[in-house]
Length: 187
Image 1: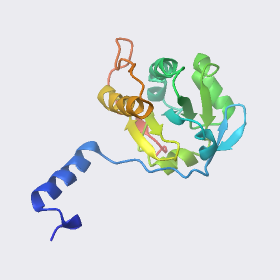
Image 2: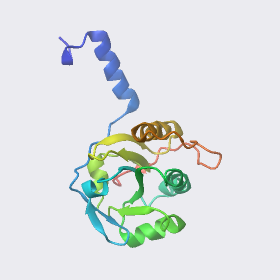
Image 3: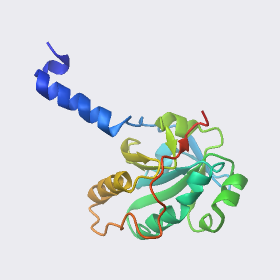
Image 4: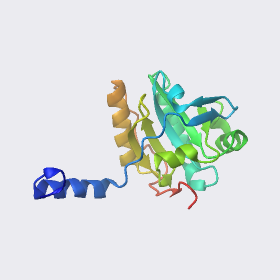
């Protein structure tokens, strides 16, 4: 007998799909506190009260996360009028986040995670990462590192969840080439 009482060939396909797509991130606790770069604190559930969240999670101590900032800014601008909250989640304090994000900080929601509590709860392995979180604090889609095909899949999920039909182009000629990213928790 096979796990889940699935006949052997189908069970094998399910196992193979998991191996192909890699690890699935964890749903974070809705009680985790996230602060803005100016220090205003709310729980994740409060950030998600009205809208889903599309977050680009970055490590301000790596070049690789910096390479994706213009792409993230372009995605956030695309969804400015949509019913989704777009945010940078930065593994630093507010001053570090503002310094790292530079010109992108004033025009974006910036949430800080100085101890990487939120990032750790997601179970992310590589940064930068794109994460779509539903109003019930479940991860609806994620992509780690910069792989345009994987980021496009997350964006398709955003489009579907919001019934929005104006998908941004990924990649564009100004986006960086594909890269793996760096360890999420500095391991």
